[in-house]
Image (cartoon, helix red, strand yellow):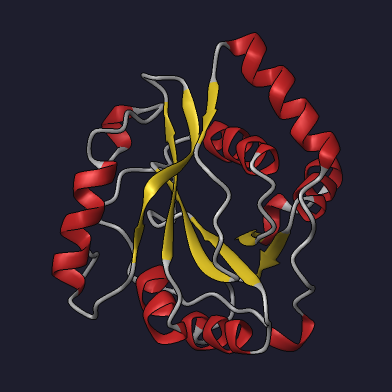
Length: 205
């Protein structure tokens, strides 16, 4: 697996949730018959998941839901996405481009980033791609474990037309198999935009 590169010394502080994006979210959700569910996390630091991820629309809905829930967090995306108006929008809501052409430990640098901030939240799409995968990448889990922060369950469900945060919070125990059983129980029933692309919720080997 190719590691992704970030430079902890160049990462900006998480941006404040945009009232304008929150307003757009309320309008879009109402027009489409969607609901934003969940409560704003009280923890100062956490990893927040965005799943299931099978379409570019997932990020759109979840960014709107995050703004409505007043979440202040950063997330990483392919550097090719950060061009033109889309790039401006992604940066405005906390997006940071990643250079996938270089090999460096993403987990170690992300952990150091948590250690250098009093308040910090990191958004991660655990599948790592919109296509079918035989499991979830484990990076998010080891970031949370090593940084000693909880995992918040951001979600999207196209059957129920919901997006937001599940009420459960996972504290990594170090037993990845057991903790992934909890993730599978919570995320398994959710309907992706493309159900055929939703893979099993197990740690990717």
